[in-house]
Structures are given as C-alpha cells and as structure tokens.
Amino acid sequence: MNPWYRRLGPGQWKAFGAAWLGYLLDGFDFVIITLVLTELRDEFDLSLATASTLVSAAFVSRWLGGLALGALGDRFGRRPAMIASIVLYAVGTALCGFAWDYWSLFIFRVVVGLGMAGEYGSSSTYVMESWPKGLRNRATGFLLSAYPIGTVLAARAYDLIVPSFGWRWLFWIGILPVFVALWLRRTLPEAKDWAEEVGSGGGSTSASALLNRRWAPLNVVVAVVLATCLVLIFSGHAGSLYPLYIALCVVGFVVFGVQISGRAWPVAVGLMLTVFCAFLYSWPIQSLLPTYLKTELHYNAGQVANALTWAGLGYAAGSCLAGVVGDRFGTRATYVGGLLLSLVFVFPAFALGSGSIVLVWLLLFVLQGTSSGISGLLPKYIGDHFPTRLRAASLGFTYNVGALGGAVAPLLGAQVAGHIGLGPALGWLAAGLTVLTAVLVGFDVPARLGRVGRLRRREGAEVG
Image (tube, rainbow, N blue to C red):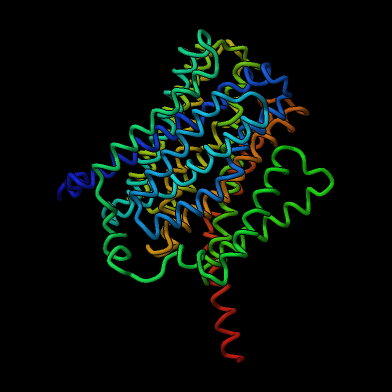
C-alpha cells in the first residue's frame, strides 16, 4: 500500500503549505502580548490582573471574527476568508506597537482577535476540505503545529529585539504577514469540497441565514450588545451587573448559534462548552507561563526564550503525533488519551525551582505535547458535526465562542495565584479542567445534546 503522503497531489500540499504559513504567523502575532506583559505592566503602571486583560482583549472579539469571516468563507470560499483574516491580525498587531495607553492597546488587541478567529476557522476548513477524508486528522494536526512554531519564533524574537529595542518593535514586525496574504491571493486554488458542493451553486449557506432580511436588524442589535457586554466583563468594568452581562452573552450566542447551525444548534452549544473548558485548561499556562518564568523562577530573557522554545516544540510535535494517531485510532479516543496522559506531567512541571533548568524544559515539552498538542484534533472534531455549506461559520463561531475560556483563563490564573502562588495555580487549574474536558469529549456531549434535541422534535411532531 502506498504511504499516506503519496495520496496527496501538488495542489493539496500547496494548500496545506499556505495555510500552515498563515497559521504560523498567526501564532507569532497572537502570543507577543504574553511575552511583554511585565514590560507593559511597568510602562502603563498596571497590576498583573489588569495587564492580563490585554491577553483577554483579543478573545473578546473572536466570536465575531469566527462568525463573520466564517460566513464569508461559506459564501465566497475558504481562500478569500483566509486571506482577509491574515490581513486583519497583521494590521492589528502592528497597531499595538503604536499604543499610547491601556485602552488603545486593548482596542488594537480586539482587532487581532477578529483576524485570528477567522484564520482558525478558514485555514482549518480549507485544509480539511482539500485533503482526503481518511487523512483529515493529520491535516488539522499538522496544520495546528504551525501555531506553536510561531510562538517559538516570537520567543526568539523577544530575546533578540526587546532587550535592545523595546517591546514596540516586537509588534511592528507583526505586519509582515500582509505580504504573505498578497502572495496567497495570487497562487492558491479553492478547497475541493467547497468548490464542488457550494461554489457550484449548492444552496444556502450560513451567510444566507445571517443576512436574511427578517434577522439582519436583530443580528446587528445582538452583536452590539454582545460586544459591549464582553468589553465590560473582560476589562473589569462590569461592576454589580456582571451576572446580567454574562446572561446576555449566553442568550446572544445561542441566537447566532440557532441561525448558523439550524436544528443542530444544541450541538453547537455543546461544542462551545467543550472548547471553553479546553481553553480553560490550556490558556492559564500559555498566557502566564512567561510571567511565571520571569517572576517565580527569575529567568532572564534568554532563559525565558529557551523554555518557551521547548514548550512550543512540544506543542508542535504533539499536534503532528495527534494527527497520525487520530487517523489510526479515531479522533475522540486519541483526544481523550492525550488529555489523560498530560495529567502525569502537570504538577511536576510547576514544582521545580530555578536550578532545574533542563528538567523544566523537558517537562514543558512533554506537558505541552500531550495537553495543548492534542488540541490539533479540535478542528476535525468540531467540523465533523457540520455539513460543508455551514462548516466554516459553525466551526469558526463555536470554536471562538468557546475560546472565551482563553479570556477567562489569565484572569482566573492571576486571581488564584494571589492565594496559592502562580506555579500551584497553573498546575491545579490545568489538571482539574483537563479532566472535565476529557469527560466532555469522551462522552461526545455535543452529539448527545443533538440527539436529545432531535428526539424531542420527533415527539412534538407525533403529538401534533
């Protein structure tokens, strides 16, 4: 039997290479903020908790980026949506370098979030729909390995640039992906599945529902309410109305979920919950690890860059391995197995002192490989729940609503750290929420919610 890679033609490898490069640059641009939190805290006179909201700011807008750019991808193709996403996050990152205070940086980070959300949904659907069905765990696992490679490059750039030139230059070089987008626009083919099923006139898409004359005015109002509530919540200005704002957000997300997913909206809600928990276990570490290394272990810029390099390489290796194993043993079984294995390494990784540098590297490599790396299967897991004509928006929206867990994570990590210390806080949060995510994926809770919804509809029809 031919090796798996010979089942792919030049066009499919080209599609993958382009999406991989776009996602690598996405990881570079997005993670910069976590590297310079201590510098921003000093320059703008912020507490750690307030500085952490700058990480959260990009997550505030991700739901909208996933929804709007996903709908663009469903209606006009995966390629233009991916290109638009790259331009958005690159411009947003460059603007961060011109920030003059907390709020200007918060707003520019919101722009980054819009583009990153669109990149995740459009690039993953683009590659999945370009590769054979039997290789799609590999497609998403290999694709998502680009993100941690981008974070590794960002860590190395931090070591080279920030000590000599300051934090702003790290953001200014984030404009480079715009030139990649211009190249992609000229050379890429469209995804095969979309071209055959939708591009040739395959019926309505998620964009059709969102732009329906009956729903469009309500959608504008809901979007404004959602954006306002999220900014107030994650900037720390919600006050006593905090529970009300959360409730309004939940209702708004369900409203959009019903429109883009139709009768499968309970599945979408279940996926949002699953992804939310996945971000809660992984992002306290991803967002606060540089701060932990600098403040608790007292690493210098070079040592921080080295530690993050090993963590990023572990993440990338884990994503690739997850793709190979996922195609062999199934998406859910592989996902749950990786999560449970990661529990072995969580507490040791944050129990070592500053003298165990090499061992810290090794533990971060294995921990990120088994925990964050296994999330390379998430696009395949989510995408399997939706048809092609709804896939980009449904995947992009459900994933990026769930990604609000990444906005909660650094705030939660900072709050818990105030009571038990940053290292123990990262360990306990990662362990507890990893178990919860494994339960949700292992029992495929989203699909179960969908079956309950279909059963109730049938019972209602029979009664009627």
